Length: 239
Image (tube, rainbow, N blue to C red; front, side, top):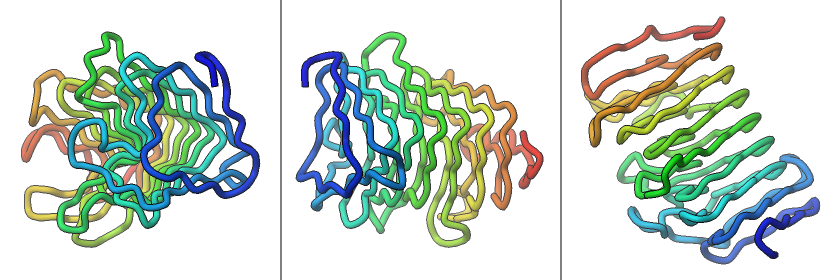
């Protein structure tokens, strides 16, 4: 497809062989999350660099992804979509993203910390995310705008779940979402939270959190690394 064009994906289940690299401005639109599903034939990601992502949006590219389910079942995926460039995700679903059973790693959407693009912004709206091995949406550079989306953790167990994690001086607007079942504990210092804002790697991380519903989570909003502000536990009427 030419730059600025669209890929229209009809109803059905599609198997992608290997990594999908987006190097130009493009839109991928399915027929709806219950109609169009994309799965991997067994992609094995690395723990760092661009090959972390099953779908990798390169630095000068822009991806608009909508009306599709991305299912990582059976693959070793660090990041479902790795945004080094800009993009939007709307009316989509992300399920089953696990990188390693030995460590609590895996991200459905990764707004990449390695990007050097100024003004790096990824917007996610009306999207469902569940069964992620660690993070639903990770903001590690620039800004993630997350709205009207639903995050479901795995409940209690020996693992970590963060619906949204903001790190490395990145920022996020987290507006009008629902979060539930973030109850995993990895160790005494690493405890799941619906929203986690930390400066472990770089200073300056921030989040604007308004109008969210958070329930059945050990921590609603955790701020800082192993210390800092912990905002309650369950907020069925919103935060």
